[in-house]
Image 1 (spheres, rainbow, N blue to C red):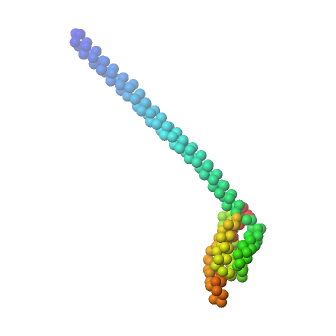
Image 2: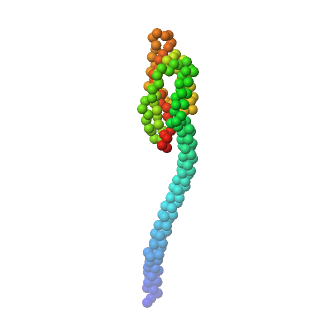
Image 3: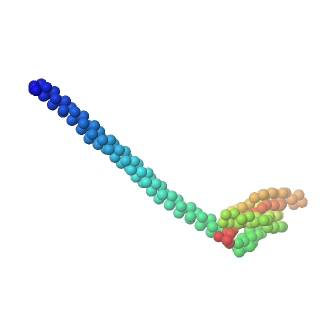
Length: 178
């Protein structure tokens, strides 16, 4: 064999070895490396998501505490069913203190809501408008939760400045089952 053929065979062997090493060593290693990078990126994305969820969870915990405090404040304003007569007595005293004359007070059907009971009372009061205004302001300042609905004012024709009011006032109290 001549030296030129040897060089060509040697050159062909070197190229063949380079191709074989690329095909069987470098290409699989690059594929494995790319797969590992993808897995690392996925894990980093999950870690970032976990960090966001962790910060959201701590925010939710703080929000939950605020909601629980608000519920406690709300429930503190709901008397137990046994104190409902006291609340009604307070409302009647407020009306009388402001110069209103209670004519009728009748209890309507109570409705049971989730955790509390609403007791509507139909009331008829007589007096002047300023007395009604003062009465409503004092009702607003009560520690208990009340709601006025279906308010109608009628002018009394025989007395100047006198009116009669008919309204439904709801008193809310704790459901004794909870």
